[in-house]
Length: 144
Image 1 (cartoon, rainbow, N blue to C red):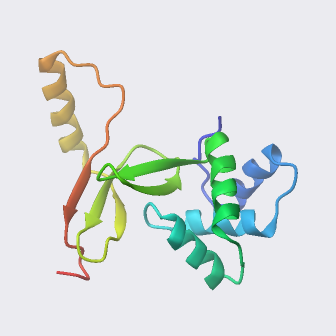
Image 2: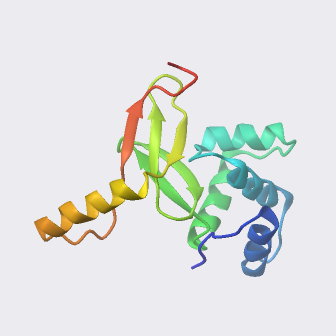
Protein backbone atom coordinates (compact mmCIF):
# COMPACT_ATOMS: atom_id res chain seq x y z
CA UNK A 1 0.00 0.00 0.00
CA UNK A 2 1.28 3.40 -0.98
CA UNK A 3 0.97 6.52 1.11
CA UNK A 4 0.47 9.84 -0.59
CA UNK A 5 3.28 12.00 0.67
CA UNK A 6 3.92 13.32 -2.84
CA UNK A 7 5.10 16.89 -2.84
CA UNK A 8 3.62 17.60 -6.26
CA UNK A 9 1.13 16.23 -8.73
CA UNK A 10 3.77 14.73 -11.02
CA UNK A 11 5.19 12.63 -8.16
CA UNK A 12 1.67 11.40 -7.39
CA UNK A 13 0.99 10.48 -11.03
CA UNK A 14 4.34 8.73 -11.25
CA UNK A 15 3.63 6.67 -8.12
CA UNK A 16 0.23 5.59 -9.46
CA UNK A 17 1.52 4.85 -12.98
CA UNK A 18 3.90 2.26 -11.52
CA UNK A 19 0.93 0.33 -10.09
CA UNK A 20 -1.59 0.62 -12.95
CA UNK A 21 -1.28 -0.87 -16.43
CA UNK A 22 -2.25 2.37 -18.18
CA UNK A 23 -2.60 5.96 -17.01
CA UNK A 24 -5.84 7.07 -18.66
CA UNK A 25 -6.92 10.69 -18.99
CA UNK A 26 -9.83 10.22 -16.53
CA UNK A 27 -7.49 8.68 -13.93
CA UNK A 28 -4.87 11.38 -14.44
CA UNK A 29 -7.50 14.12 -14.16
CA UNK A 30 -9.03 12.48 -11.08
CA UNK A 31 -5.62 12.53 -9.39
CA UNK A 32 -5.34 16.20 -10.30
CA UNK A 33 -8.75 16.94 -8.76
CA UNK A 34 -7.76 15.19 -5.53
CA UNK A 35 -4.42 16.97 -5.42
CA UNK A 36 -6.09 20.38 -5.90
CA UNK A 37 -8.91 19.77 -3.42
CA UNK A 38 -8.68 21.56 -0.03
CA UNK A 39 -10.57 18.71 1.63
CA UNK A 40 -12.61 15.57 1.09
CA UNK A 41 -14.78 15.47 -2.01
CA UNK A 42 -17.98 13.55 -2.81
CA UNK A 43 -18.68 11.52 -5.94
CA UNK A 44 -21.09 14.12 -7.39
CA UNK A 45 -18.43 16.79 -6.79
CA UNK A 46 -15.83 14.58 -8.48
CA UNK A 47 -18.04 14.07 -11.54
CA UNK A 48 -18.63 17.83 -11.72
CA UNK A 49 -14.92 18.62 -11.27
CA UNK A 50 -13.99 16.17 -14.03
CA UNK A 51 -16.61 17.68 -16.35
CA UNK A 52 -15.26 21.17 -15.67
CA UNK A 53 -11.87 19.90 -16.82
CA UNK A 54 -13.47 18.51 -19.99
CA UNK A 55 -13.36 14.86 -18.93
CA UNK A 56 -16.75 13.24 -19.36
CA UNK A 57 -17.20 10.11 -17.25
CA UNK A 58 -20.18 8.49 -15.60
CA UNK A 59 -20.51 7.67 -11.89
CA UNK A 60 -19.73 3.98 -12.50
CA UNK A 61 -16.33 4.89 -13.96
CA UNK A 62 -15.65 7.25 -11.07
CA UNK A 63 -16.49 4.53 -8.54
CA UNK A 64 -14.18 2.08 -10.37
CA UNK A 65 -11.31 4.58 -10.29
CA UNK A 66 -11.99 5.30 -6.61
CA UNK A 67 -11.90 1.58 -5.85
CA UNK A 68 -8.57 1.26 -7.64
CA UNK A 69 -7.06 4.25 -5.83
CA UNK A 70 -8.35 2.99 -2.47
CA UNK A 71 -6.85 -0.47 -3.07
CA UNK A 72 -3.50 1.21 -3.79
CA UNK A 73 -3.72 3.30 -0.61
CA UNK A 74 -3.67 6.56 -2.59
CA UNK A 75 -7.02 7.75 -1.27
CA UNK A 76 -9.27 6.81 1.59
CA UNK A 77 -12.94 7.10 2.30
CA UNK A 78 -14.16 9.61 4.85
CA UNK A 79 -17.58 9.00 6.37
CA UNK A 80 -18.91 12.27 7.76
CA UNK A 81 -21.84 12.32 10.19
CA UNK A 82 -21.88 8.56 9.88
CA UNK A 83 -23.59 8.73 6.50
CA UNK A 84 -22.05 10.93 3.80
CA UNK A 85 -19.11 9.41 1.91
CA UNK A 86 -16.26 11.60 0.76
CA UNK A 87 -12.83 10.73 -0.59
CA UNK A 88 -9.44 12.36 -0.12
CA UNK A 89 -5.75 11.72 -0.65
CA UNK A 90 -4.25 9.54 2.07
CA UNK A 91 -1.95 12.07 3.66
CA UNK A 92 -0.94 12.73 7.26
CA UNK A 93 -3.70 12.49 9.85
CA UNK A 94 -5.98 15.52 10.13
CA UNK A 95 -9.52 16.50 11.07
CA UNK A 96 -12.43 18.01 9.15
CA UNK A 97 -14.43 21.22 9.36
CA UNK A 98 -17.95 20.73 7.94
CA UNK A 99 -20.08 23.75 6.99
CA UNK A 100 -23.72 23.21 7.94
CA UNK A 101 -24.86 25.69 5.30
CA UNK A 102 -22.95 24.92 2.09
CA UNK A 103 -21.75 21.43 3.21
CA UNK A 104 -18.17 22.24 2.20
CA UNK A 105 -15.64 20.03 3.99
CA UNK A 106 -12.17 21.37 4.72
CA UNK A 107 -9.12 19.64 6.17
CA UNK A 108 -7.98 20.99 9.52
CA UNK A 109 -4.98 20.22 11.67
CA UNK A 110 -4.96 21.53 15.26
CA UNK A 111 -1.79 23.07 16.60
CA UNK A 112 0.71 20.98 18.50
CA UNK A 113 -0.48 22.09 21.97
CA UNK A 114 -3.98 20.67 21.34
CA UNK A 115 -2.50 17.35 20.22
CA UNK A 116 -0.25 17.17 23.32
CA UNK A 117 -3.25 17.81 25.61
CA UNK A 118 -5.20 15.07 23.83
CA UNK A 119 -2.33 12.60 24.25
CA UNK A 120 -1.93 13.48 27.95
CA UNK A 121 -5.65 12.95 28.64
CA UNK A 122 -5.65 9.60 26.88
CA UNK A 123 -2.52 8.51 28.71
CA UNK A 124 -4.15 9.33 32.08
CA UNK A 125 -7.14 7.19 31.05
CA UNK A 126 -4.83 4.35 30.06
CA UNK A 127 -6.53 4.20 26.68
CA UNK A 128 -4.56 3.18 23.60
CA UNK A 129 -6.10 4.79 20.52
CA UNK A 130 -5.86 2.82 17.28
CA UNK A 131 -7.37 5.57 15.14
CA UNK A 132 -9.87 8.40 15.49
CA UNK A 133 -11.95 10.84 13.52
CA UNK A 134 -12.90 14.36 14.52
CA UNK A 135 -15.47 16.42 12.65
CA UNK A 136 -16.29 19.97 13.67
CA UNK A 137 -19.61 21.33 12.43
CA UNK A 138 -20.41 25.02 12.00
CA UNK A 139 -20.41 27.78 9.41
CA UNK A 140 -17.49 28.41 7.07
CA UNK A 141 -16.07 31.87 6.43
CA UNK A 142 -18.26 32.32 3.34
CA UNK A 143 -21.51 31.34 5.07
CA UNK A 144 -21.11 33.26 8.38
